[in-house]
Image 1: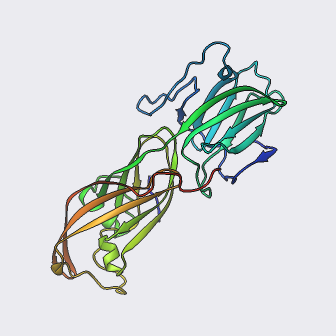
Image 2 (image 1 turned 30 degrees about the horizontal axis):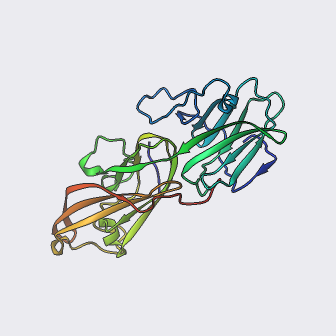
Image 3 (image 1 turned 180 degrees about the vertical axis):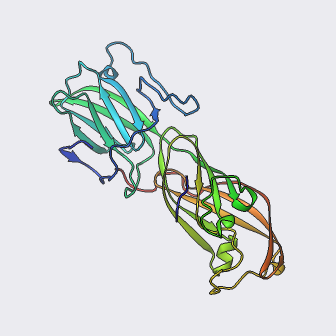
Length: 295
């Protein structure tokens, strides 16, 4: 899996629209849900409504890939379902078509800004009366757990079609939250490649969906390159460097942006560099709330 630089019609929608639809995948079961993913390692929560409570209007409320899917109980006669965001504002409204028991709210997409993290209210309405209500919490928690240099791990699934593949990087990313998000880019600060191009950072543009669980993301960017093969920028004089800290920071569509720092020891000389990765680890987040508005 290599990356290069690397819903239903509705009457009314408050917020932005997304372009993704029809995606399927592992269900992330949340509050008010009655079914769960088969992967027992994925974070999930469940509520069992007391008989006769308003939550009985719903069969299931869960995230399926990028969409919040609301399934109504077969005996629920709702005209519409409203989604109220954590700020208490209407996010979206979906009309329930005759004979249907399901509505879908698209919350993520490649061109979307993301959603507000926190607890959402899902309200079933008949006429001007609320006939059912439940909540669902959306909280992705993403960590970059490793940054891997291809030269040190040649047996991984690298794209080896080019001569520079040994200087590529891969990230191991873990979402321990209960909702998905998109990783839209990774910024490499103070990397060997950035030094070659005489800039502070270089950026890998991505559009990778991070469902709960672990994902390995490969890039075709020569992050550990110490000289420019085109000759435009020349090369690093590694003899003048000792140890430097590379920092990889991911940009998320929703959630806190994760970072990972890696200490690199430089040796050798210009056009003949020796790099050694000394250590590395996650270094926290740069944001703790949504990176955009509601869908």
